[in-house]
Every structure is written in C-alpha cells, then in structure tokens.
Length: 638
Image (tube, rainbow, N blue to C red; front, side):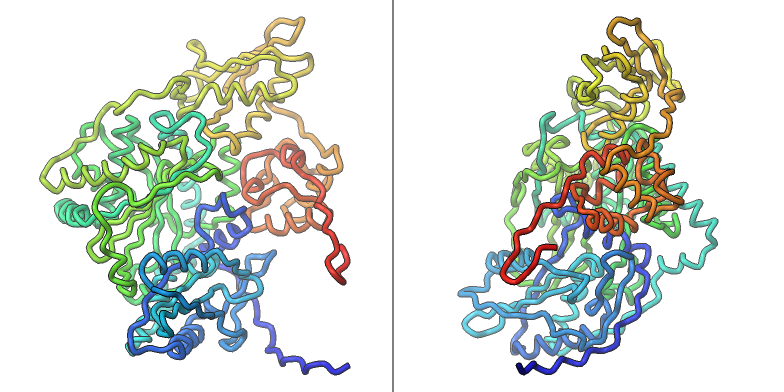
C-alpha cells in the first residue's frame, strides 16, 4: 500500500521557562471554565478598510506571526515552559464566513461564536482568525486568542497592528525591555520582603465586606452587566483633572467611596491589574504583560473625595513598587495563611482597565444609548466572591463592565451600581466634595456579625458544623466574656456531639469548607457537650491535631502524588490533615499532580480546589474512578 511522503519537520524548539506573570495564566487554563476569573479565550474584531482583500489579511497575519513570537508559541502541559516555533511551523489558523450583513450585532455574535471554539495551546497556535465576507467583500476580521500567552491588551494591540497593516501603515518595532521585568535583577531579599508585604496586606483586611449589605442569602449565581455613557466620560475627565489623578484612578476611588458608603468599612483590599507597558514603545506588546497587585484602601470617615483620590493613588503607587512576585509561591503562602487564620482573604474589588484606544472597530460600536445597564443576566455557575469591575474609555464613551455574585449584590443592586457611580461623578464634576460617610448606608443583614477578622454569617458556620457526622446540634455566637488575640470578641461554637468527637475534628471540618461555603469563618473556641458527659471547652490555639497518615486507597494515591511533586521525601510523611500548600506543593506543580492521579485512574478534584485551603483528607474523599470510555471504531480502550 502506498503512503504519502511524510512532511519534513523542523527541529523541536527549546523550552523556555514561563515568566512570573505567565505562570498564573498557564495554571488557570486547568481550572474548570465556569470558575475562571479571566475569560479564556479572549476575542475581539476589527473592520477591514477598503480596498484590502482576503489575501491582504492573510499576508498581514503572516507578517505579524513572524514579528510576534507569542503567535507561534505553545506551552508544555505539565511544566511551566513555553516553546517558540518558526514562523512557518503551522498553517495560519484562518477561515472565512459569509454573512448577509456585517452589522454590529452580527459582528458581536460571530465573535462570540469564534471564541467558543476550543484552542489547544499545547499543540496548536494560541490564536484563531475568521474573515467575515458580505456579498463577497471582506468586511471584518475576528480574532480570538488564548490568555496563556496573550492578554487583553495584547489582543487589542494585535488587532490595532493588523488594522494598520491593512491600511498600508508601518508598525513600529516592539521594545523587549519591560519595566516590571527589570525587577528580576533585584536581590532575592527584596523579592521576599515584597512577598511578605503582599501577605500582610491580605491578612490585615476584614473578610466578607460587601456580603452583609446586599445580595441574597441564597444567592447561587452571578450577574453580568455593561453600562455605557457619553456624559459620564466628560464628567470623569473633569473629576480626574480637578483632583490631578488619572481617569482610571478616579474610577477606582469612586468604587472605594461606594463600598465605604454601602458598608461603613473604611479599610479593605482591592486587586488592581497593572500593565507592564509603562512606556509608549511598549503599548504594542502582544504578550502577557500584566499582573494583579493588592491595593490597600484606607479611607478616613468624613474625608472629601479629593483626599480619597489622593489616598487611592498613593496606595496604587505603593502596590506597584512591591517588586517581583512569584505567583506559584504566593498562592501557596496565601492558602497556608488562610487556613491558619480560619478565613479566606478575598478582595472587595477586582479592578481592571481597558484603556487602549480601539479605533479599529466599526463606528456603530460607539453609539450606545444612554440609560441603565446595557445588558444584565444571571448565570447558574459559581458565584463571585468579589465585585469585578472593568473600565474602558473609548471614543468618548465611559464603559463599565460589572460581574458580581448574587450573594453580594442582587440584580437590582448590580444594575444600580454603575448608575450610582455615574451620579457620583456628576456631583463631583459639579464641584461637590462628597465626603466619605462614617456609617453604612444600610444595616447589615440578620445573622451577620463583625468579628475581628471580618464579617461572618453565623448560620453558615452552624450549617457546616451540623454537617460533621459527630455533631447532633450546634449554635454559633460571639462570646461576650471571651477575647481573641487582638482583643476582640471571640466566635464560639456550642455543640452537642456524639462520644469521641473532638474540637480538633470540628475545627478541621470547618477549615476544609472555607473555600466551598461563602462567608465562613472558623470559631475561636469550641464548647462540646458529648452525650452523657459535661461540657468541655477548647480554644483553637490549643487545638493541635496529631498528624494523620493516609488510610484509604484514594488517600494513599493522593499522598504518593503529593510526595512526587512536593518538597517531601516520601508518602509516609504526608499529613492528610493539612492542606496541599503545607507540603510544599505550589500551583505550578498541580498539573503534574493531576496527571499522576489520572494515571492511577482517579479523578474528581479540580485544579483550583488543590490551590485552596482544604485538607488532603477532604480532597481524597472526593476522588472517584475515571469513567470507562466505550471503544470507537478501531480504537481500543485505554
């Protein structure tokens, strides 16, 4: 039988380590899609200026592929390593689609459809393009890219350069000297000090700031909305000029003002995305050049907005100077810290700015009607623990995209948030000071209590405690006579239990559910009353559970995988009562750990669960056999 001649293959490219910003997105691709913070893949489009042809689009994308190594990069599935291929390594991933009318609605729908197609960044180019033709005339190019090697700003820069090439313009050369990357030359002591500061900022903030003051107690989804306003654009410009801050900083200050007004909390954490494109020569960078830094918001009750804006600007500048981060190590350190504190440190606001000019889109995109939120919908996926706000300032339009969990803001409150922000900007633009209120706008919902570590929903703690098999009844309340390490009132659990149930068992049980149940906090003291006995009181500081070796087959499999990828010497020293981070396993080792479990025929644990606070014993209980796949055609089962 004759065979087609095999295509000559180029030598395999040498692997390069992913930088400290790319590592997070490399890990994030393993998280189940509904629970990802960042959309993967990203997608956008640009119009094709006449008289450019489909051949011109192909030529321009080929030139950009040769120019940007990110467009010809693949990643290793099990190690944080990338491979840069030759420009002719693979055919350009471009196709075409005929449409009756290339209007704004069609472009948005077609872009969403292209984004829904899977991209495998391990085996194929991390991008895909589609040319829309109207009556045979090319009208637009749709582009989607995987976040592992191209970020949102990079996609916009790529489309802008594509549009320039189609117009016959020269594209300036890209600079390979990036300001944040220069921190790699700093002494390791500086990096470790920055990491300690990062963790200190997380630990110093109250938990659950937004939840007690809005939303629904039974919220199980999330709302997504977009608000666009031409008037707010002008108001924001006047506010920024008056207080001598950037428009992006002014919006973050307005968000902080809104949180303080709603909750009465004047100290909380915001996660702010910083782009590694500080100079004009870097604005055309296509790769992942942004990271998230923790910004500590400290507001003085009664402070005028000018003081708020200056405070937020200073906090951002401090956060930007933290130095070099190692996301894998930091996430593990945060998990250890959260488990030790008994509460998950969640920022109140996740803030991102899309501040690039997108002049390559069709003009119709920028004529939105004034009024309330452009669209809002609820999804039955995992609720958000923070308020996500994305700001864009394009062609004179203020656009705020909001994603928020139903337990934080209900549909009405979510839709009202950008309207309130625009009203605040209007008042500020007209000269008002808008001082920060000293008290919250609304009282906390029933069942909530302000502990020294933050807000906690007492019924949630009681429900988790009752889920332990040794608990017959449980109530949780602040103890007036008990004081915690910081002098505040302690959270105390009173439980009627079966004989043999210990405070250590209950404490570990609550810790295992920190990442699963919103608004949860471990009690500081346990008062247990076993049947037939008197009450026993145990402070959490004295609850030192003994090391527990693996006992079941799933636990032994997980312990062996942990020992293989962590910093231990063997599965015999794995403590099933402690979390993954306690064993020296960081998120960059999670794909290898999952592969080892898969090789043993086990599944049931998601990668983001492995990066959390749950103990290994709790994770092992979720392991289950891989489903048997039926043979297809000549295939044989694995």
